[in-house]
Length: 136
Image (cartoon, rainbow, N blue to C red; front, side, top):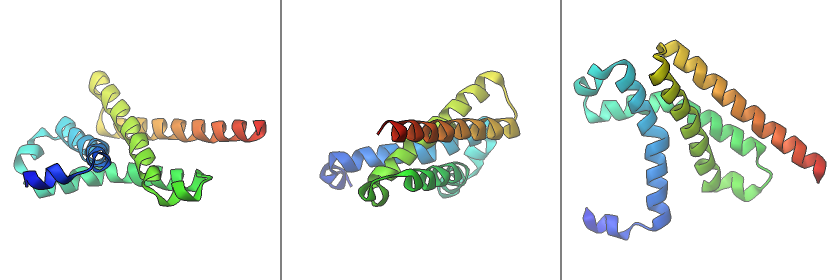
């Protein structure tokens, strides 16, 4: 197993770390914040699937958005769009989790907050694209 880890390239290791931080960790933190008993009760496979079910839709929205607004064919097909979508997902979920934790929000409020943050990010990117398109 350690031999396989040694054979990983730097870019592959970075992608695995971003994948964990962007997809698994936010879902796990949501579960731990609202139902900590599930962390103990569920086995690892179910916990991973449940975590992905919570953060996966946000990633899917971001991936579709990034690929639809991309002007470059290479960006659309490559890993670049996935990494950008992971960064957007991380931003949306961690900011909403941070505010939820300190404001002691209910689950529905956290979901609405994440949706509002997602919408703000999408609108900011669309506005930036339109402003830079007019300047060109």
